[in-house]
Each structure stands twice: as structure tokens, then as C-alpha cells.
Length: 166
Image 1 (cartoon, rainbow, N blue to C red):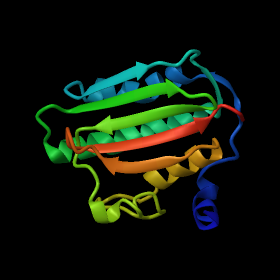
Image 2 (cartoon, helix red, strand yellow):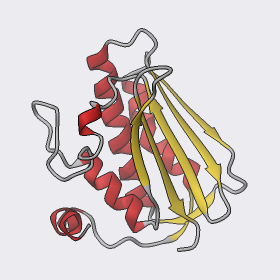
Image 3 (tube, rainbow, N blue to C red):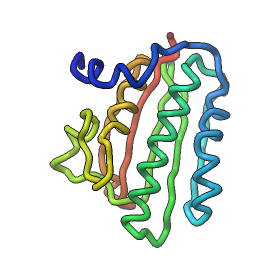
Image 4 (tube, rainbow, N blue to C red):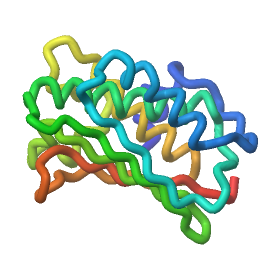
């Protein structure tokens, strides 16, 4: 992890953890994509007891912006007949659990272990920083992240947790 932190650290300032409306941050992050890609269904399902979560609102905004941007690009490349992004929020005892699913191309099985490394990209014009920044934000928020494919519906699944004890 020190290599990731060193490579990505200049891009993100130190997080400032304050009580923020988590769902509102998420909705603001996805709004431009809902407007610009009206054919892609973007659905949030929240089971949070309280929408207020201690987090860095700018970093969480960036996290969701990066994830939605990647998903939209993958969905467009996949030419999905049912383009969608589902975001599920659940509250655990000590964490917020988020499952992010899309109907894009998914991940190559051989890439699952390296997809969040800095400068890893499968795109012609990609910087390879999007998912490494997402991972860094999750780790800075005391969480974990995993990437896998949605075998039932095709597409990608990204499951991550964020600590409630910051």
C-alpha cells in the first residue's frame, strides 16, 4: 500500500472527516451522468438508518464520480440493451456497505488483482488513476474494496465498506 499512497498522494489532499449527508453527496455525483445519459438507468437503493455519515465529502463525491464515469464508459462500449447502474447502501454495525453494479463489460478475470493499481488501464486514452483513487479514498475512510464480475447479469461489481468510526 505505501507505493499506491506515494503515487496517488499528490492528487488527493488529506481527508477532512465531518458529518455529511452521504446520499446527497452520491446524488450530486451522479446527477450530471443522469442528465447526459438519460438512457442509462442509475438507481440508488439505501437502507441507511441515517443518511449522515462521517466522511470527507469531496473525496466521496470523487469516488462516486469516478465509479459512475467508468461504468458509463463500459456500458457504452458494451452496447448493453439494458444499460443500468445500481448502487446499494446498507448500514453495518461499524461500517457503511456499498455495492456498485453496472451492465458494462465487467473485468477481465486476469485483471481483477491489478485493476486498482496506479496507471493500470484498458482504455486507449485512460490515465489508469480512476480506480486507484477510488481504492485510496476507501482505505482513507477505514474501509475495504473488492472488484468482481456480476455473473448473473454481466457487468462489474464493486463492493466496498467505509468505517463509521472515523
